[in-house]
Length: 99
Image (cartoon, rainbow, N blue to C red; front, side, top):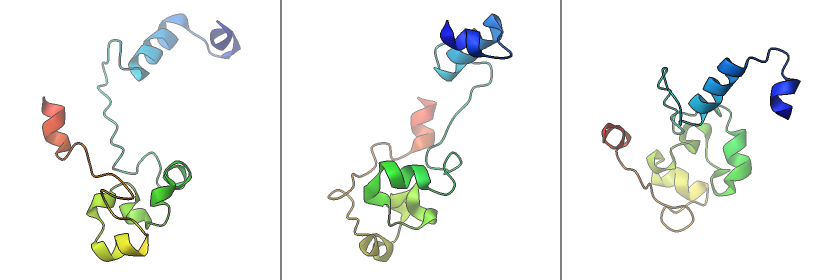
């Protein structure tokens, strides 16, 4: 109720639908698919560097996909996959999405 009342442009129907859409529990007419490996949501890497300090020393190019970094880059960033940072759980994202 507080959130609804503080919105300048509040509209019960639109806000309810958008919250359901964002929570992936309602009618999802836009079928949003967010890809955390794209870096689109965190292009400069500040969020990952703050909340995943194990990856802080990686260059932006590999920050969202550390498994793609060459061994030399991983060593320079003090990262050893499976030891200091876990391996990927989902290996083929497209295949997993199709299931």
